[in-house]
Image 1: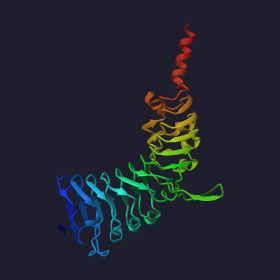
Image 2: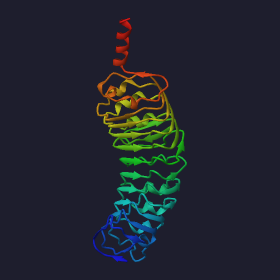
Image 3: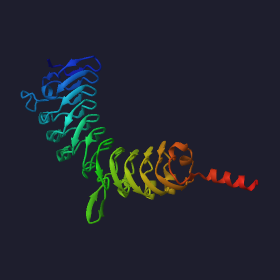
Image 4: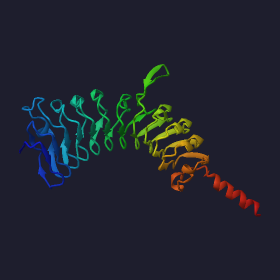
Length: 309
C-alpha cells in the first residue's frame, strides 16, 4: 500500500496487516491503536527515499509490530517518533543516532535489551526520551541527561552504584577528579524499578527546575540529601521501596509545590519536618518505615494525653 497524502491520521481504525510504504511528501503519519504487525522495514527501508523524506511525526504506538530495523538514516526530518507498546525486540538500532532533529523519542513497552547505544548522543535536539518498560541492562550512560527535559527509564534492568547521569548546568563541578557538567532545566526523571544502588547523588539536587523525580523500587541507601530542599519546583517525589535511612531532612519543608510524596518502605525514622506541605500527606506517604515517623501534632497530642493521667 502506497500512501502519499501530507497528513495521514488513521488512529484506532482497526487496521490489520503490515506497514505501508510512504511517498516523500508525507509529513504526519498517525496509525496508533491498530492491529498492524510484522517489521518496520516496509515503512523505513524504502531505497527510493534517499533522505528525501519530509516525515516529521511518526506514531505507531500500540500495535503488534515485532521486528525493528536499522534504516533510520534516511529519516532525518523526524521530530517525533512513538513506536511504544508494540512487541519490538532486539537492540536500539545504531542508525537512530542519525535522527538529528528528533525532539521526542518513545520506545517504551517493548522488549528492547542490551545497552543504550552511544549513537543517540548525536541527537542533540532530543528533549524527551522514554525507554521505560523494556529489558535494557548494564549501567545508565552518563551522557544521557545532557539535553533531555523528560527522561523515563523505569522498569528495566539497569544496574549501577550510582545513577550515572550527567545533567548540564551553566557551571562545572570537580567530583573525584572528573569534571562533570549538569543541566538545570530537566523537568521529569523516572528511573524507578531498576537495580540501582548506592546513595542519592547530590548532583540530582542541583536540578532546580525538576518537577518530578521517581527513584522508587531500587536499592538506594544512605540518607536523603538535605540539598533536596533546593529543588523548589518539585511537584512529585517518590523514593519508596529503597533502603534509605536517617531522618527526613528539614529542608524538605521548602518544597511548597509538592503535590505527591511517597517515602514509604524505607528505614526512615524520626519526626516529619514542620511545614504544612509535608504534614498534609497521609500515612500512605510514610508507611512501611520500621522506626516510627511522627508529626509534631502527633507528638503534641501524645504529650497532652500523658499529662491527663
